[in-house]
Length: 419
Image 1: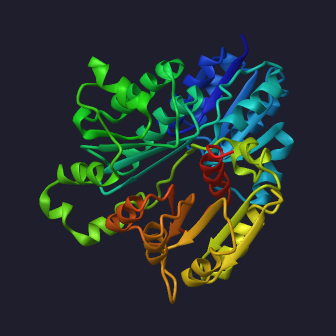
Image 2: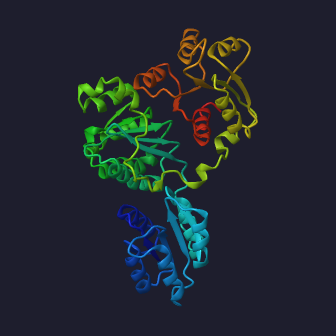
Protein backbone atom coordinates (compact mmCIF):
# COMPACT_ATOMS: atom_id res chain seq x y z
CA UNK A 1 0.00 0.00 0.00
CA UNK A 2 1.42 3.36 -1.06
CA UNK A 3 1.89 5.98 1.68
CA UNK A 4 0.90 9.62 1.24
CA UNK A 5 1.65 12.47 3.64
CA UNK A 6 -0.75 15.45 3.58
CA UNK A 7 0.57 18.66 5.16
CA UNK A 8 -1.95 21.48 5.45
CA UNK A 9 -2.99 23.80 8.27
CA UNK A 10 -6.69 23.65 7.41
CA UNK A 11 -8.08 20.70 9.35
CA UNK A 12 -11.13 20.63 7.09
CA UNK A 13 -9.08 20.45 3.90
CA UNK A 14 -6.66 17.96 5.46
CA UNK A 15 -9.45 15.64 6.62
CA UNK A 16 -11.28 15.75 3.30
CA UNK A 17 -8.17 14.98 1.25
CA UNK A 18 -7.04 12.26 3.65
CA UNK A 19 -10.43 10.56 3.62
CA UNK A 20 -10.62 10.77 -0.17
CA UNK A 21 -7.15 9.25 -0.63
CA UNK A 22 -7.79 6.58 1.98
CA UNK A 23 -11.01 5.62 0.19
CA UNK A 24 -8.96 5.15 -2.98
CA UNK A 25 -6.68 2.62 -1.22
CA UNK A 26 -3.77 4.73 0.10
CA UNK A 27 -2.29 4.82 3.58
CA UNK A 28 -2.49 8.47 4.61
CA UNK A 29 -0.83 10.42 7.42
CA UNK A 30 -1.35 14.08 8.24
CA UNK A 31 0.83 17.01 9.22
CA UNK A 32 -0.95 19.96 10.82
CA UNK A 33 1.93 22.42 10.20
CA UNK A 34 5.47 22.52 8.83
CA UNK A 35 7.11 21.13 11.96
CA UNK A 36 4.56 18.35 12.39
CA UNK A 37 4.86 17.54 8.70
CA UNK A 38 8.65 17.26 8.82
CA UNK A 39 8.42 14.88 11.80
CA UNK A 40 5.84 12.70 10.02
CA UNK A 41 8.01 12.77 6.90
CA UNK A 42 11.04 11.36 8.76
CA UNK A 43 8.97 8.79 10.65
CA UNK A 44 6.56 7.60 7.92
CA UNK A 45 8.86 7.79 4.86
CA UNK A 46 5.94 8.44 2.49
CA UNK A 47 5.87 7.59 -1.21
CA UNK A 48 4.32 10.99 -1.97
CA UNK A 49 3.96 14.30 -0.14
CA UNK A 50 1.07 16.72 -0.74
CA UNK A 51 1.70 20.02 1.01
CA UNK A 52 0.48 23.59 1.14
CA UNK A 53 3.04 26.25 0.28
CA UNK A 54 2.25 28.41 3.31
CA UNK A 55 3.13 26.61 6.56
CA UNK A 56 3.93 27.78 10.09
CA UNK A 57 6.50 26.62 12.69
CA UNK A 58 8.59 25.51 9.71
CA UNK A 59 7.97 26.90 6.24
CA UNK A 60 7.57 24.72 3.16
CA UNK A 61 11.04 25.63 1.85
CA UNK A 62 12.59 24.36 5.10
CA UNK A 63 10.54 21.17 4.96
CA UNK A 64 11.61 20.58 1.35
CA UNK A 65 15.26 21.26 2.18
CA UNK A 66 15.09 18.73 5.00
CA UNK A 67 13.53 16.23 2.61
CA UNK A 68 16.31 16.81 0.10
CA UNK A 69 19.07 16.29 2.67
CA UNK A 70 17.61 13.01 3.93
CA UNK A 71 18.65 10.14 1.57
CA UNK A 72 15.48 8.24 2.56
CA UNK A 73 13.20 11.03 1.29
CA UNK A 74 15.32 12.92 -1.24
CA UNK A 75 13.60 11.29 -4.23
CA UNK A 76 10.08 11.44 -2.79
CA UNK A 77 7.86 13.37 -5.23
CA UNK A 78 5.94 16.39 -3.99
CA UNK A 79 2.62 17.91 -5.03
CA UNK A 80 2.21 21.47 -3.77
CA UNK A 81 -1.05 23.37 -3.36
CA UNK A 82 -1.68 26.96 -2.40
CA UNK A 83 -4.27 29.70 -2.69
CA UNK A 84 -1.71 32.02 -4.27
CA UNK A 85 1.92 31.92 -5.34
CA UNK A 86 4.07 33.84 -7.80
CA UNK A 87 6.42 32.55 -10.50
CA UNK A 88 9.54 33.30 -8.49
CA UNK A 89 8.34 31.06 -5.66
CA UNK A 90 7.54 28.26 -8.10
CA UNK A 91 11.08 28.50 -9.50
CA UNK A 92 12.50 28.33 -5.96
CA UNK A 93 10.71 25.08 -5.05
CA UNK A 94 11.23 23.30 -8.39
CA UNK A 95 14.63 21.76 -7.42
CA UNK A 96 13.03 19.92 -4.49
CA UNK A 97 11.32 17.31 -6.68
CA UNK A 98 8.05 19.24 -6.76
CA UNK A 99 6.31 17.48 -9.63
CA UNK A 100 3.08 19.48 -9.77
CA UNK A 101 1.63 22.68 -8.39
CA UNK A 102 -2.12 23.26 -7.89
CA UNK A 103 -3.88 26.43 -6.88
CA UNK A 104 -6.85 26.50 -4.55
CA UNK A 105 -9.77 26.04 -5.07
CA UNK A 106 -8.48 22.60 -5.96
CA UNK A 107 -9.95 20.41 -8.70
CA UNK A 108 -9.88 17.00 -7.03
CA UNK A 109 -9.95 14.93 -10.22
CA UNK A 110 -6.81 16.67 -11.50
CA UNK A 111 -5.06 15.98 -8.20
CA UNK A 112 -6.06 12.30 -8.21
CA UNK A 113 -4.92 11.95 -11.81
CA UNK A 114 -1.50 13.33 -10.85
CA UNK A 115 -1.32 11.02 -7.82
CA UNK A 116 -2.11 8.10 -10.10
CA UNK A 117 0.63 9.07 -12.56
CA UNK A 118 3.30 9.65 -9.91
CA UNK A 119 2.64 6.46 -7.95
CA UNK A 120 1.70 4.21 -10.87
CA UNK A 121 -1.62 3.29 -9.26
CA UNK A 122 -4.98 3.20 -11.06
CA UNK A 123 -7.60 5.38 -9.36
CA UNK A 124 -11.18 4.71 -10.44
CA UNK A 125 -13.72 7.54 -10.48
CA UNK A 126 -17.41 7.70 -11.33
CA UNK A 127 -17.71 8.82 -14.96
CA UNK A 128 -21.39 9.81 -14.80
CA UNK A 129 -21.81 13.33 -16.28
CA UNK A 130 -22.74 15.66 -13.43
CA UNK A 131 -22.53 19.33 -12.62
CA UNK A 132 -22.93 20.40 -9.00
CA UNK A 133 -22.84 24.04 -7.96
CA UNK A 134 -23.15 25.03 -4.29
CA UNK A 135 -23.27 28.53 -2.85
CA UNK A 136 -24.65 30.32 0.17
CA UNK A 137 -26.66 33.52 0.50
CA UNK A 138 -29.19 34.99 2.93
CA UNK A 139 -28.98 31.91 5.18
CA UNK A 140 -29.93 29.60 2.31
CA UNK A 141 -27.61 26.97 0.85
CA UNK A 142 -28.31 26.55 -2.86
CA UNK A 143 -27.28 23.20 -4.34
CA UNK A 144 -27.87 23.00 -8.10
CA UNK A 145 -27.37 19.65 -9.81
CA UNK A 146 -27.56 19.07 -13.55
CA UNK A 147 -27.04 16.20 -16.04
CA UNK A 148 -26.93 13.34 -13.52
CA UNK A 149 -25.71 12.04 -10.15
CA UNK A 150 -22.04 11.23 -9.66
CA UNK A 151 -20.74 9.43 -6.56
CA UNK A 152 -17.46 11.35 -6.47
CA UNK A 153 -19.24 14.69 -6.91
CA UNK A 154 -21.67 13.88 -4.08
CA UNK A 155 -18.73 12.95 -1.88
CA UNK A 156 -17.12 16.25 -2.81
CA UNK A 157 -20.34 17.99 -1.81
CA UNK A 158 -19.77 16.80 1.77
CA UNK A 159 -16.68 18.94 1.98
CA UNK A 160 -18.23 21.89 0.14
CA UNK A 161 -21.23 22.06 2.47
CA UNK A 162 -19.03 21.92 5.55
CA UNK A 163 -16.73 24.55 4.08
CA UNK A 164 -19.60 26.93 3.27
CA UNK A 165 -21.13 26.56 6.73
CA UNK A 166 -17.79 27.40 8.33
CA UNK A 167 -16.97 30.27 5.98
CA UNK A 168 -20.29 32.00 6.58
CA UNK A 169 -20.81 30.94 10.21
CA UNK A 170 -24.20 29.42 9.41
CA UNK A 171 -26.12 28.33 12.49
CA UNK A 172 -29.52 27.27 11.12
CA UNK A 173 -29.16 26.46 7.41
CA UNK A 174 -32.02 26.22 4.96
CA UNK A 175 -31.25 24.21 1.82
CA UNK A 176 -32.73 24.40 -1.68
CA UNK A 177 -31.66 21.45 -3.86
CA UNK A 178 -32.37 22.25 -7.51
CA UNK A 179 -32.36 19.23 -9.82
CA UNK A 180 -32.10 20.86 -13.24
CA UNK A 181 -33.27 18.82 -16.22
CA UNK A 182 -32.44 15.48 -14.61
CA UNK A 183 -34.28 12.27 -15.43
CA UNK A 184 -33.61 9.55 -12.86
CA UNK A 185 -34.67 5.91 -12.68
CA UNK A 186 -34.76 3.22 -10.00
CA UNK A 187 -31.09 2.49 -10.81
CA UNK A 188 -30.24 5.96 -9.50
CA UNK A 189 -32.00 5.42 -6.15
CA UNK A 190 -28.78 4.67 -4.17
CA UNK A 191 -27.15 7.86 -5.48
CA UNK A 192 -30.27 9.91 -4.74
CA UNK A 193 -30.39 8.54 -1.20
CA UNK A 194 -26.71 9.35 -0.85
CA UNK A 195 -27.33 12.92 -2.03
CA UNK A 196 -30.15 13.67 0.42
CA UNK A 197 -28.33 11.90 3.28
CA UNK A 198 -25.22 13.96 2.54
CA UNK A 199 -27.16 17.23 2.65
CA UNK A 200 -28.90 16.34 5.91
CA UNK A 201 -25.79 15.00 7.62
CA UNK A 202 -23.32 17.70 6.65
CA UNK A 203 -25.60 20.73 7.01
CA UNK A 204 -27.29 19.44 10.19
CA UNK A 205 -30.46 21.00 8.76
CA UNK A 206 -33.86 19.86 9.92
CA UNK A 207 -35.57 17.85 7.15
CA UNK A 208 -38.37 20.43 6.98
CA UNK A 209 -35.72 23.05 6.17
CA UNK A 210 -34.68 21.16 3.01
CA UNK A 211 -36.62 21.60 -0.24
CA UNK A 212 -36.05 19.71 -3.49
CA UNK A 213 -37.03 21.59 -6.65
CA UNK A 214 -37.67 19.06 -9.42
CA UNK A 215 -39.96 18.05 -12.25
CA UNK A 216 -38.70 14.47 -12.31
CA UNK A 217 -41.51 11.95 -11.62
CA UNK A 218 -39.16 9.40 -10.06
CA UNK A 219 -37.75 11.88 -7.54
CA UNK A 220 -41.22 13.13 -6.57
CA UNK A 221 -42.43 9.56 -6.06
CA UNK A 222 -39.29 8.18 -4.39
CA UNK A 223 -38.47 10.75 -1.69
CA UNK A 224 -41.82 10.80 0.17
CA UNK A 225 -41.53 7.02 0.66
CA UNK A 226 -38.23 7.31 2.53
CA UNK A 227 -38.98 7.40 6.27
CA UNK A 228 -35.54 8.76 7.17
CA UNK A 229 -36.19 11.74 4.87
CA UNK A 230 -39.57 12.57 6.40
CA UNK A 231 -40.07 16.31 6.18
CA UNK A 232 -37.94 16.83 3.06
CA UNK A 233 -40.45 18.25 0.58
CA UNK A 234 -40.36 18.10 -3.21
CA UNK A 235 -41.90 20.81 -5.37
CA UNK A 236 -41.88 21.92 -8.98
CA UNK A 237 -42.67 25.52 -8.04
CA UNK A 238 -39.69 27.79 -7.49
CA UNK A 239 -41.83 30.52 -5.94
CA UNK A 240 -43.35 28.32 -3.25
CA UNK A 241 -40.00 26.74 -2.39
CA UNK A 242 -38.32 30.14 -1.99
CA UNK A 243 -41.25 31.60 -0.04
CA UNK A 244 -41.29 28.69 2.41
CA UNK A 245 -37.55 28.86 3.03
CA UNK A 246 -37.56 32.63 3.41
CA UNK A 247 -40.74 32.51 5.47
CA UNK A 248 -38.98 30.37 8.04
CA UNK A 249 -36.87 33.43 8.77
CA UNK A 250 -39.82 35.72 9.45
CA UNK A 251 -42.29 37.76 7.40
CA UNK A 252 -40.18 40.92 7.64
CA UNK A 253 -37.38 39.33 5.63
CA UNK A 254 -39.74 37.44 3.34
CA UNK A 255 -41.25 40.70 2.10
CA UNK A 256 -38.06 42.73 2.08
CA UNK A 257 -37.44 43.70 -1.57
CA UNK A 258 -33.73 44.23 -0.99
CA UNK A 259 -33.34 40.78 0.57
CA UNK A 260 -35.27 39.24 -2.31
CA UNK A 261 -33.06 40.89 -4.90
CA UNK A 262 -29.92 39.59 -3.23
CA UNK A 263 -31.27 36.10 -2.58
CA UNK A 264 -29.89 34.26 -5.61
CA UNK A 265 -26.49 35.92 -5.50
CA UNK A 266 -23.43 34.22 -4.10
CA UNK A 267 -22.40 35.77 -0.80
CA UNK A 268 -18.80 36.62 -0.03
CA UNK A 269 -16.99 35.07 2.94
CA UNK A 270 -15.29 37.15 5.59
CA UNK A 271 -11.96 38.80 4.70
CA UNK A 272 -9.06 36.40 4.57
CA UNK A 273 -11.25 33.37 3.96
CA UNK A 274 -11.68 31.47 0.75
CA UNK A 275 -12.93 28.20 -0.69
CA UNK A 276 -10.31 25.46 -1.01
CA UNK A 277 -12.06 22.84 -3.14
CA UNK A 278 -13.54 23.37 -6.61
CA UNK A 279 -16.83 21.55 -7.25
CA UNK A 280 -16.04 21.28 -10.95
CA UNK A 281 -13.66 18.68 -12.32
CA UNK A 282 -10.76 19.89 -14.43
CA UNK A 283 -12.15 18.74 -17.77
CA UNK A 284 -15.32 20.74 -17.21
CA UNK A 285 -13.34 23.96 -17.30
CA UNK A 286 -12.30 23.30 -20.87
CA UNK A 287 -14.57 24.57 -23.62
CA UNK A 288 -15.21 21.14 -25.05
CA UNK A 289 -18.39 20.44 -26.97
CA UNK A 290 -20.56 18.07 -24.88
CA UNK A 291 -21.37 14.73 -26.59
CA UNK A 292 -25.05 15.73 -26.78
CA UNK A 293 -24.12 18.74 -28.90
CA UNK A 294 -21.66 16.81 -31.07
CA UNK A 295 -24.61 14.79 -32.38
CA UNK A 296 -26.30 18.03 -33.46
CA UNK A 297 -23.26 19.51 -35.20
CA UNK A 298 -24.38 21.76 -38.04
CA UNK A 299 -28.09 21.11 -37.49
CA UNK A 300 -29.25 23.92 -35.19
CA UNK A 301 -30.27 27.54 -35.55
CA UNK A 302 -29.78 29.73 -32.48
CA UNK A 303 -31.17 33.21 -31.86
CA UNK A 304 -29.27 35.52 -29.50
CA UNK A 305 -31.61 38.32 -28.42
CA UNK A 306 -29.50 40.80 -26.46
CA UNK A 307 -28.58 44.46 -26.94
CA UNK A 308 -25.09 43.79 -25.53
CA UNK A 309 -22.72 43.12 -28.42
CA UNK A 310 -20.23 41.52 -26.03
CA UNK A 311 -22.82 38.88 -25.11
CA UNK A 312 -23.64 38.33 -28.78
CA UNK A 313 -19.97 37.71 -29.55
CA UNK A 314 -19.54 35.51 -26.46
CA UNK A 315 -22.31 33.16 -27.59
CA UNK A 316 -20.95 33.08 -31.14
CA UNK A 317 -17.47 32.22 -29.81
CA UNK A 318 -18.70 29.54 -27.39
CA UNK A 319 -20.68 27.74 -30.10
CA UNK A 320 -18.22 28.40 -32.94
CA UNK A 321 -17.17 24.73 -33.09
CA UNK A 322 -20.73 23.40 -33.42
CA UNK A 323 -21.29 24.56 -36.99
CA UNK A 324 -24.65 26.00 -35.93
CA UNK A 325 -26.28 29.02 -37.54
CA UNK A 326 -26.31 31.84 -34.99
CA UNK A 327 -28.37 34.99 -35.59
CA UNK A 328 -28.17 38.03 -33.29
CA UNK A 329 -30.90 40.55 -32.55
CA UNK A 330 -30.31 43.84 -30.71
CA UNK A 331 -33.80 43.94 -29.19
CA UNK A 332 -36.98 41.94 -28.82
CA UNK A 333 -38.80 43.64 -31.68
CA UNK A 334 -36.17 42.62 -34.22
CA UNK A 335 -36.48 39.03 -33.03
CA UNK A 336 -40.29 38.98 -33.06
CA UNK A 337 -40.36 40.50 -36.56
CA UNK A 338 -38.00 37.76 -37.76
CA UNK A 339 -40.21 34.91 -36.51
CA UNK A 340 -42.37 34.95 -39.66
CA UNK A 341 -39.49 33.84 -41.84
CA UNK A 342 -37.10 32.08 -39.43
CA UNK A 343 -37.24 28.86 -37.39
CA UNK A 344 -35.11 28.50 -34.27
CA UNK A 345 -34.05 25.48 -32.24
CA UNK A 346 -32.93 27.52 -29.21
CA UNK A 347 -33.23 31.14 -28.08
CA UNK A 348 -30.95 33.01 -25.69
CA UNK A 349 -33.08 35.90 -24.43
CA UNK A 350 -32.04 38.92 -22.36
CA UNK A 351 -34.70 40.49 -20.15
CA UNK A 352 -33.60 44.13 -20.20
CA UNK A 353 -33.49 45.59 -23.73
CA UNK A 354 -34.65 48.78 -25.46
CA UNK A 355 -37.83 49.00 -27.57
CA UNK A 356 -39.11 45.54 -26.57
CA UNK A 357 -37.77 43.75 -23.50
CA UNK A 358 -37.55 40.05 -22.78
CA UNK A 359 -40.83 39.82 -20.88
CA UNK A 360 -42.64 41.46 -23.81
CA UNK A 361 -41.11 38.83 -26.09
CA UNK A 362 -42.27 36.03 -23.78
CA UNK A 363 -45.76 37.55 -23.66
CA UNK A 364 -45.85 37.74 -27.47
CA UNK A 365 -44.82 34.10 -27.82
CA UNK A 366 -47.45 33.02 -25.31
CA UNK A 367 -50.19 35.09 -26.99
CA UNK A 368 -49.46 33.58 -30.40
CA UNK A 369 -48.90 30.03 -29.03
CA UNK A 370 -45.31 29.96 -30.28
CA UNK A 371 -43.33 27.30 -28.43
CA UNK A 372 -39.54 27.65 -28.41
CA UNK A 373 -36.79 26.36 -26.11
CA UNK A 374 -35.65 29.51 -24.29
CA UNK A 375 -32.73 30.21 -21.99
CA UNK A 376 -33.10 33.55 -20.27
CA UNK A 377 -30.03 35.34 -19.02
CA UNK A 378 -30.05 38.58 -17.13
CA UNK A 379 -28.25 40.61 -14.47
CA UNK A 380 -31.58 40.81 -12.62
CA UNK A 381 -31.54 38.44 -9.63
CA UNK A 382 -34.65 39.63 -7.79
CA UNK A 383 -36.72 36.63 -6.78
CA UNK A 384 -39.91 37.97 -8.35
CA UNK A 385 -38.07 38.48 -11.65
CA UNK A 386 -36.80 34.90 -11.70
CA UNK A 387 -40.22 33.49 -10.80
CA UNK A 388 -41.96 35.63 -13.45
CA UNK A 389 -39.62 34.30 -16.13
CA UNK A 390 -40.09 30.71 -14.95
CA UNK A 391 -43.88 31.13 -15.02
CA UNK A 392 -43.65 32.03 -18.70
CA UNK A 393 -42.28 28.54 -19.26
CA UNK A 394 -38.64 29.35 -20.00
CA UNK A 395 -36.36 26.33 -19.91
CA UNK A 396 -33.59 27.89 -17.83
CA UNK A 397 -32.54 31.15 -16.18
CA UNK A 398 -28.87 32.13 -16.13
CA UNK A 399 -27.46 35.04 -14.13
CA UNK A 400 -24.89 37.35 -15.74
CA UNK A 401 -21.92 37.39 -15.93
CA UNK A 402 -22.16 34.27 -18.09
CA UNK A 403 -19.68 31.41 -17.97
CA UNK A 404 -18.88 29.82 -21.37
CA UNK A 405 -18.90 26.25 -20.07
CA UNK A 406 -22.30 26.79 -18.45
CA UNK A 407 -23.73 28.01 -21.76
CA UNK A 408 -22.61 24.79 -23.42
CA UNK A 409 -23.98 22.61 -20.63
CA UNK A 410 -27.33 24.39 -20.49
CA UNK A 411 -27.73 24.13 -24.27
CA UNK A 412 -26.93 20.41 -24.09
CA UNK A 413 -29.46 19.84 -21.31
CA UNK A 414 -32.27 21.53 -23.20
CA UNK A 415 -31.58 20.43 -26.77
CA UNK A 416 -30.94 16.76 -26.05
CA UNK A 417 -34.66 16.28 -25.37
CA UNK A 418 -35.56 17.49 -28.87
CA UNK A 419 -32.93 15.63 -30.95
